[in-house]
Image (cartoon, rainbow, N blue to C red; front, side, top):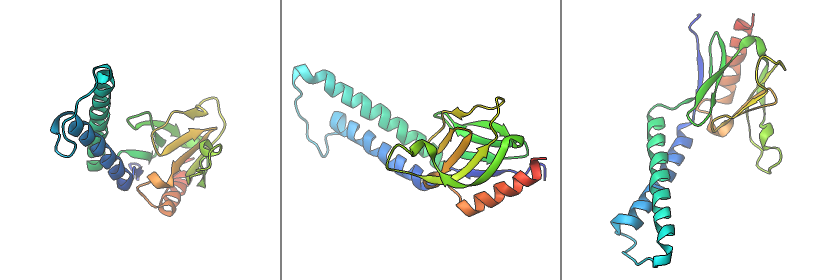
Length: 181
């Protein structure tokens, strides 16, 4: 039982949308710059060449990076949240690097709204974990897409979760009782 872990992966539906967006950007850059199958060849004004090449570089590099990263993540989705005997690890940074907070700092586990979205009209909810206010853990961190951590509150947004909300809350509450000590 000591090796028990619970993981919430990034939703494959979300990943597929990013994959399609990256594929479209990559295709647009290649089509306009090199292929000319749908959009025929055209002349660029000499004073606008910098904009043309900037467009090509942006669309090919950003589209290609989004396409390739999403393809790799579709094959093996990254974890937005992973709970184990040591504590709760959540995704931070651009590459979903885990940041661990031990169970002794976990206060409540439930469902709530993302506090970082309050100034906007697009309020999103999801799995919410509140931590005890302590100088031993940070009160906020830059997180990966689908995760928000500020004011000692971690929110995993529902639209990015690869598991059901009910299953996630129940499993994490069970682990909290077991490991909090």
